Image (cartoon, rainbow, N blue to C red; front, side):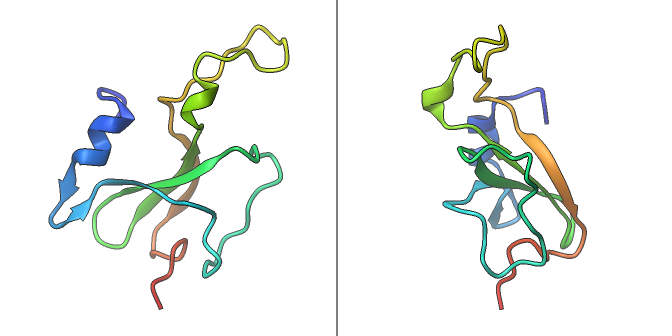
Length: 96
């Protein structure tokens, strides 16, 4: 997945479903909990794999592009998908 930008993956489909999706918030109907180390600015997202499997993680909002993180010398990258969970059975964003 690192060969192309995240905007490329948002346009790709696996069957009739988008391959990469950004969520408006962490889902309420989920079997997962937000780890304490995740920044509050995180945009929760997922990559669809085969069957019910998903890679769950987050991206950072565009306004953080190339901003320095707390004068650390490190810069935020808004084209990075930060992996947090492997959801093998579609339990992160439950539909029912």
